[in-house]
Amino acid sequence: MLQDFYGLREQPFGPTPDPRYLYPSPSHREAAASLLRGLTDGTGFLTLIARPGMGKTSLLFQLLETLKDTARTAFLFQTQCNEREFLQYVLQDLGIPNEDSGFASMHAKLNEFLIQEVQAGRRVVLVIDEAQNLSEAVLEMVRMLSNFETPRTKLLQIVLAGQPQLAAKLRRPTMAQLLQRITILCHLKPLTAAEVAEFVHHRLQVAGLVGDSLFPPASLALIAQGSRGIPRLINDICYNSLALGCATGRKRIDTKIVEQVLSDLSLESLMRKVLPKPVPELRKRPKPLSLLPALLRNLRSQH
Image (cartoon, rainbow, N blue to C red; front, side, top):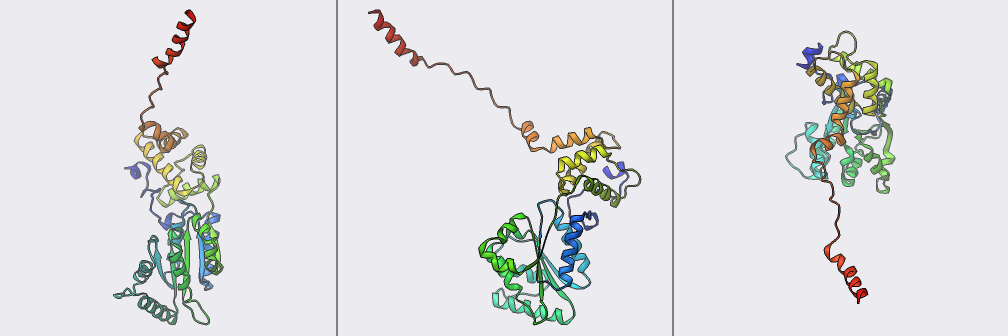
């Protein structure tokens, strides 16, 4: 219904990390170029750090799409696991049969697979998303996986992607050996107000919009302010604004609609709406017994 009302082929502000909708901001272009250059040059360890909602996973999917004809890739997001489970996930995503769950057997199978791939002229790339959730023990295993190499090349290239907690974890003294192996470190920045406007226009165009933008400049400025330049929040605000505009028959999303959406999405506003108002505290009355000492003093003075 929303698509028909606004003349769109599909919903432009969906929550899934669709690479078609990835807006190439300068920060995103720089990070993508650095990662691709590192993988092309055979760098062993690369890291991408971004706050939640910055489009990190979409960028990684786009990167894997670029590599699909020249590399075997694995994408892992099950990061709350132990060492054995992690290695099993790696083998499974690379399509390596594994009936024996012993460490030595799994390492041998992975090493054999990596040698076969390099002999066939393909590199192997392991992308680990939400890596901030990995325990130090699993991160140490990841470091050990980078030891798969020949005298001239790395057999396995690893991209660690995660939230700022990953950077904090890598700075721990116990992670010094892993940190020393990271040759490329990228991060994503929030969008500026001008980039927010371009972001919204880009997604509307991909979704099939023909003609003027549905969001006037004043509305876009308000969206930039309310979202703090975070793509996921921009999507949430724009989707709810279009839904409200559709429900009220508005073809253009003015600032009143955006303000209403920002109020509805505000946690403080929601708490005020759903929680009962506190009962006013009754004025405290003196306890009856508190008058007894004064009464006794008065009686003594009369005698």
